[in-house]
Length: 233
Image (tube, rainbow, N blue to C red):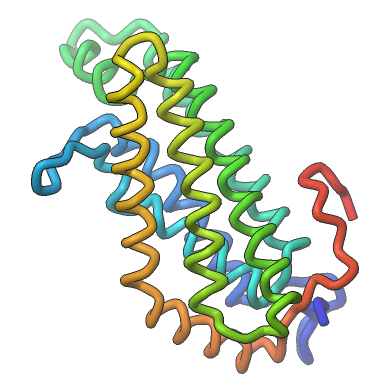
C-alpha cells in the first residue's frame, strides 16, 4: 500500500505528517552543513559539529522508507539534495559579492560559511550514496523479514549508509592532506558515533513509526519497487 490520499484530501496530495517529515529532513541536512565547519571534542575524539544533527536525517529516512516506502523516500532524498545545492549556491554567491564598506566581517564569513569545491563534492556525493544505501537496505530487509525486527532494519541500514557516507566524505575531502591512517581513523570515529546515535534513538524511532502507521493507515512493502535512484516512477 503506498497511496497517501486520505478522506478529505484531493487525489495526489500528501498528508501533513509526510510534509512535516520532508521539512525536517531538509532542515537537518542544511543545518548540519552550516554548522559542520566547527570542530568539537567528544571525549578524546574530534568531530564536526554537524554530527549533532546530521544523523537525524538518517533516522527520518528510516521512518520515511518504513512507513511510505522507498519510492517516496527517493523523492525526499533528491529534494534534500537540490535544496542543499540552492543553499550552498546562495551562501557562495553572498560570499563572492563585494561587502559594503561598513561591514568588517568578510573574512569571518568566508572562514565559517565558505565551501571549497572539493568539500562540496565530497558532501554531496556522500549524502546521495549514504542516503540511498540506507533506504535500499531498510526496504529490502523489511521485505525479507516480513516487517519484523524494526530495530535490526534501522540499525543495519544505518551501519551501511553511514559507513558509505563517512568513508566517501572523509576520503574525498581530506585525501592527500592527512596520512591514510588518520583518514581511516576519522572515518571510523564518525561512523561509530553516528551508528551509536541511531541505536540510542531506536525507542523514539519505534514510537514515531508506530504512530505514523496508525495515523496514515500505511505500512508500505517494496515488493515491486524499482530501486534505481534515478527512476521517475
